[in-house]
Image (cartoon, rainbow, N blue to C red; front, side, top):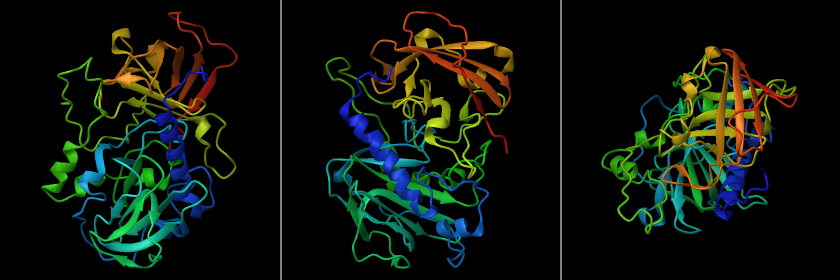
Length: 368
């Protein structure tokens, strides 16, 4: 199954997304995108929030890129293994080229700068209030910008990096996203919706750019995207169902954190919320399901569902949310309890069902 060809763009996107995750958390001493227990020690919290910043609200008054320098936005919740098995807690501005000016969306204090490394991208975190910080990734940070500096809305703070996207995330210590495990990154645990903080009419302009790639014009000459997705959603855990994030049983390391290949998520396409997506870290791409196969929606799977079968398609090969290539596999999954499931994937494109074998894996919620 891993031999399936993937579009070159998608490969670059996956690799760059993983790299950014490493950059964002590198100062925590982890190389996997996390800080361990997100209940947070004082030391960790100081890396993400500054208690000396004023109390207040946040308004983003400037786009991070000029409108001519990007053509669309990928909202929250993208499932994009291997680096983003879980739905993403940040959004993507898809650029029209490299070396585009990057601007501060609002004023604040620089808490952290990741210098450009061997892959050419860096990242920055900027505190706005004592409880809210934003971060931007896949950038070359301006050489004269230092930790502790103050920036203003509209200041050019960087240029875009060596990928097709610039990432924007927001973390808000007042948020309760309802995750069922605290073994996730702090940016996810406290993740918020960046576009919702933009002032009008800028917010409406940006929401209009939350749209998928334009489909093949010959096949869909009159296509208009009208799903009305705005911010997207990445916090989709539902206790007692498949929906949301899972960890391979026994996969937590001694530092109470996980490796990406030990993770699993059941969710939906960011642009077409009726299209099921599955991310599993042992594969280098996500899986798409076809509605015509009548799959059971993840939120409707429970301990009473016995064994559920899903026909799998490569999620990198879709048009208007629907898989365009042939079926590549079959998944069987069973909820053993509200917080534990059994799962196995077969390289089988013809069977309607399969029995579990000794190769089956077990995943848990690690319920808080």
